[in-house]
Image 1: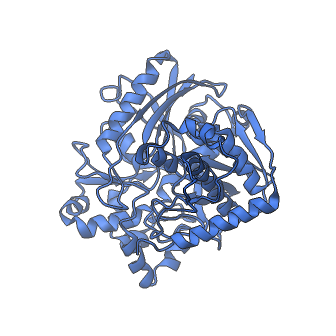
Image 2: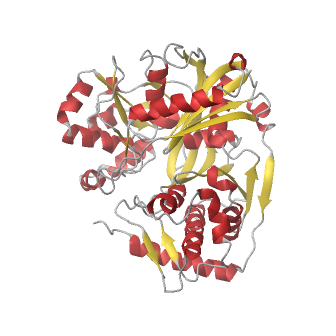
Image 3: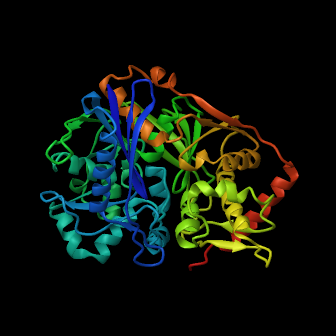
Length: 489
């Protein structure tokens, strides 16, 4: 009765097997390359994503009894757009990643033409390079020969979940769910379906888009000839942040979580109604049941948090691994006046400035790598505080994702926001959420109440520190953010 879940993230693919008691029995992982063809551009090879999926799955299968597996759940990086040939399943170009900023000028043009208010009304989003629709418009304008094959029906268009389903079913199924569809700028949030008006605005043929299916329930079987001998029902699909919300069992209105991944994403369940924000938050679909009931959320999307730590490791090479950062940062009591604005791919919520660029300020001859590492962890806490300042009052915040294992970060976060931070025993709740969806769709769990019973607290971090000093440091960091805005322009 165990569930296989695939978490196709921004830098790698994780495969997990989850048991009926909500325990992760085994894990496999495979990174894939990041491609940066120009400043501000980020791309992935779809074939490398698929091969990483196979390798991660192969690794986890070697640790479990395959006969125990009953269903498959998929969760994925959202907003990344993929094209593939419907017959060969080969991709004519690399995927354009959610972090990519190349469409900033297109967003400016659409905004100048007066489209932003209508787009926001229909989608709950804003005109920003983050979302998929502007990427597709860029492809139509810059790569017309490729786009002609989209218009002719030869190439399919989809997000990473759609691509993986196509590969797993040998091209038989072209589907997605509301949590991915609603991030494309092509989805009418209240109607719960693709919008002909928006498809017309962005020049996307509706026939190229996937069918929208519920978040749980049997969708399609995997083809054992192409997916490691596995014939499993694909029974759960969700974008990574909605999957983490589900994995944190935030099923009631007002329950919230923050996932520390490549970026950080704060989601609050708003129930069956679309709640609009005037403070830079996004209205988004959380999930849709097989009966058609929609659950919505408010989201604060922060583009660079965990990837800032990855930059310390791979770009500056001042840490050997993300796990080292807590120990290194703890060797100093503070940053000695150093502040880091990790706007490495622009700023997301609540600022929404695609032209902002990263900044490190306050460096002196006494600055060490420990100060910079600590400034990076503090910047993550500041960015999350930026979003939480715009939300209704919260008593606690549930955290997950790889960086949630960092005790220092969790304590810094609690201190900055002045709220308790709760970390569950299982911090990889993105993959867990995909497993929960698939298990709910195939009867491993009978209800969300059964799922809630599996959630267990690992540690609760209580706020502390000098409130005035914490507020002052946040204010100084906010000054640096203002300086970073508009830098690439």
